[in-house]
Length: 361
Length: 156
Image 1: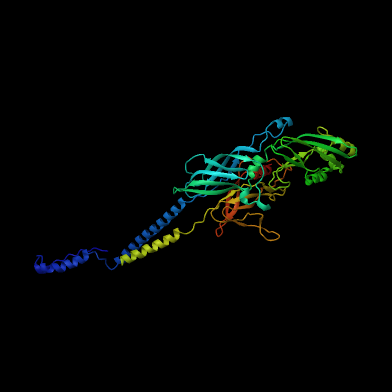
Image 2: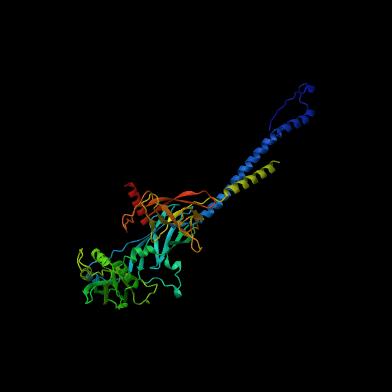
């Protein structure tokens, strides 16, 4: 666009403005003052308009997409278990070993109330507020957890939820008609309530522990078992190379217990200890009662028997289950007791003297 | 003419920016250690031949292909062990993490300190269609204690 001012001197009128020429003069200056671009200016103008339009269009589209993405992100709740120790249970503080009389005097239970902690990390693009959670497992009913704070957690930050669970280390969940247990029946799961950035409250389900190993290893496997071996005596028999081990087992639970010597454990004594154990029939201990189990033992391998006796080794021998369950029921929780079935006197008499370590039997 | 140029420019800018901005972004690969009952590991006096299996969970929003996957069985008979493995969001995979140097099992059942500090390992993984990358994963518990123990042995 160019602006050109052209001055003309009217010689025909001796310097006096001529009205007759005014129309022509107005048209000519008007053309110039009308700002019509010259022959080179139109392209630049068009380029400028195009550039401005492109920028405007691009910013409009980008803004639209950004706004749509932001709206979508505000409704996202992506919470996962934290990387380090996401689920913990306060350990047990109960006596599991010691004097038999003292243990018998201590009331036994399979129910424990322990504090539980769940830590989750926010993988959402926007901050979210964890309002609470419900935790459940085969060993405990739905338990409410509360977060430590009420502030929103930023992306990448964690939220710690805490509560108390009543854990029962009883029977395992039963599958109907002998079928396999579903994963949901075995797992520890959490249902989280989360307020996202858009203000809505949403729920998110988390699989915390696929086989509830944390509960089992922290509590149930460390809890005192209902049975207690109160006495073990050894006696030689008339048959050389044989003796009898008599075990007294007490029941500390308010329900009956079934005591058995599994054939697999007897095989372990034979292959690993050189001793053949005559497996008795299972016996039932009444609630808060006791029972005596006689185990005839024969020495079949002197080297193994001597080694096990000198090393004071024991193998899991007794299998104890809830007598209210059917024998071999998959839902029955089994505890095992290791016994020392080596009788040093009988073994050394049969196999030859050996160097004893510790107290002799 | 100017109006037409403006309209065309606006349309071109809008379409171009929309196509660029609306392109799906490559989501981050997030792998974390999953809770498992038993840590599987093997030890060997030969340097670099020992390792441990770590169970990881895919916390990403898309499937992730894990190159260090181990013991991912097929449904074939007999089952085949293949790697790598594509893990869906929320899915789990065992990965093999080699132990540094020579790591000897010093006793039959070593009592590891399960409260050992976390150990960071690098896992090769990627979203299918994108380049492979090293994904850091924090390992805790018994596996972390095993790795720490092996590092100490290496330093002896």
